[in-house]
Image 1 (spheres, rainbow, N blue to C red):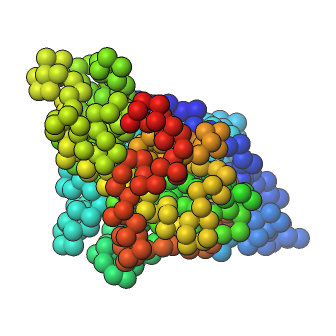
Image 2: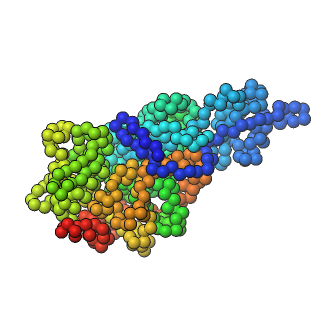
Image 3: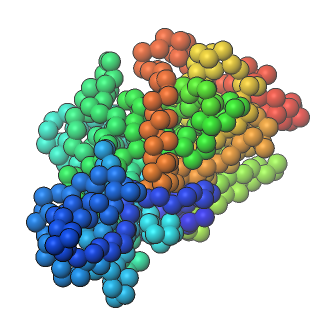
Length: 528
């Protein structure tokens, strides 16, 4: 488990790092050649290619490297190391250097990256050992131009806006790279591969691509699978010829971050049916097993991330992250950083709604009982800004819509493949938000299905972990690309069935309490 704190952001990169056979996308290979002679006067470049051919096939040698080969081979006395990077057709020579003992200090680092709409996380990986050397995180600089994805797409409709958003994410990413290199005493130049997990829109912004058609029918991205790019193509501050590989997207709102979740959970290899839910700024839902995979997505997360809640805020210092209500009515809460509270973040909101429901403060329709129109979580005297922190009737309705969108999307997917909730054998929650969300609270309000708890797994930041796995394993990279071709994407924006179910799903935990037997029993015990 890797836990890192940068500024005010707590990062858990992955709850579990799966052990994989290290076969990275950039490899350090020792080459020891016989010097040319009259009996063997093969060309210098061909001599290198022939040496590597047995394991790597025909290796491409770029023009600039060809020019340097004669001098370097003789300087190193035909004993040197080469870095080979993966490309679409095979392998390519990236650089070569002396093999003497003093050059053992030369490292081959990779960078796993999760580009979220709100937060960006990087992990520096030693590609020889697979060890994570350190992480760094910060807010996506695009938030200063627009908070949510749709607002950013609108902002980017003007070319200058697109350029500003691309510059912002590059600046964020490069600052984090400098930070993690500084902390780990590493050189940017020694980072030879970068793998990225990101949603489709964030990927487009990173590459400076037009996003205008993603948000309108027929919802088409410019590209889903970018293949192998180089760092200098985009302007990432690592080795300029280093590999830049982005996990493939599947549709307008199913990106490489979700694909990473499938890869990390291994739901694509399980015989039993799995449900994966990633609720962040958007909500992505995947259903399937080893035979089939279906997916859908929608703007489910803004209310839970504080975007449309009166005292909502991101999960940073001063945010209430946990809430409970005692039988006497006393509110107990936990604040990130152990300071006076400024507001309440997503996990705290879910806890609060759950406790309000179970204590009869709101009814199942989300209406306050007893004539109130708000609930005080923190009185003014105890808050950081001298104002009471409350949850209002409007807040409850907004969260109810978010919850209803998740319910409706899950039902559309289940009915589309002829299954029901009881058929789900494995449930996975992905993303940093899902990692810190209390499962019982999420079930109580209907955000998660009411399944046996031993079937439910919190993956943590599966986008970052998926990026790490494809960085270190070509087999996992190829597996990710196969997964992308298997997914059937349901476009909810044009689904009347989804809208019908969404309208009927605005009850806690659900319109049909039989879907939530444990919550039904809790409410019954409390006479609610």
